[in-house]
Image (cartoon, rainbow, N blue to C red):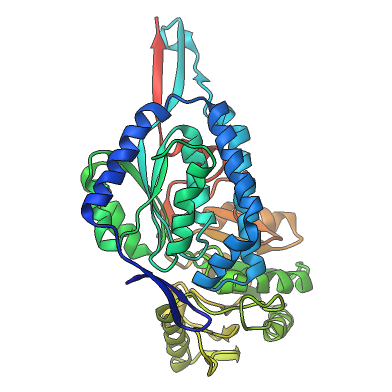
Length: 457
């Protein structure tokens, strides 16, 4: 894939970039490694000052940064603006909390025969971040903010269709005052990732993206015995029980499915509804999906813009066509419009069965699948009948049902009567084929630290 800005609303190639040659990549790795030697000794107070300055820059540059993201990957402009604000908030969160999260943890000295004993968190060094296009700012910042506050330095290999966002991030932290070399963008293709990851000066890697990409990075890192954190796909369940507020569940469910044009790992994708309220919920949900406005992502009234790539749009078309060909029913949408750009309409598909690709694969677009559950046991069974385990939504007014969903849904996050989202205050990550490790909260800042046991006699 070429490194280029291609407007998904029109299909027009706006800018192309040459990938960095191997010697430039090597020079940037060396710069990062040399920078880490001094940067690791800076104080939390100094790092926090720089990170708050970066947040201030984001706030000041919200409009133009949002336009760049929308131009490169097609999300509605107001959602891009919200993403910038979320990044600034996360930066300030870690600037304020890093010292607390990474403070020495005392142990009982008498239990280990010591005068004093504790665990100390220390940075690992140069961390490679392989990041996706769907949240081109947030995915990077939620790694970079805690990593930099912990004393690590970063190398960013961003998705090839968001190069201008990648370059902006590569300059942002240095503009905010961080030493040159603390965070650098590598404009490289996927074929150059192995070269970077195998370099002995690179200590670890984090990847958010597809399952094949995760397997590749994990395999290389495993061969090199290097730490990785992976956040891969998701096929999140959205379970609705009879006691739920059906109108609110339908309204939030639509947002949960089509946020970011349906291109979110934690978007609700499988709507599992108790049979007693299936018809009523489905009618409300389908009506709201039909009411969504698809169009130019820079238009303030647009709810759903284009998919980010032509290949992505083609994948969604193929999954829906496969389901229909095997007996599924399209309740709204299902046909790409005859217009420029890579648009796909908000779509609801019913009568899904295990033999259909859509039953087991992640649909990365504004397509919702409806499933009927006979009771809570059946709902939990269907929800867990997937290889993914990122997030799950459950809607019920029954506390006992809520407890069961929290306890039994196999996912890295369970949201009851609310939409799954990511917060700096809560750990984020998945199980099963959705990956391993955690981002955000205290857990995220500790992932790329050496947890050193200290014993003093």
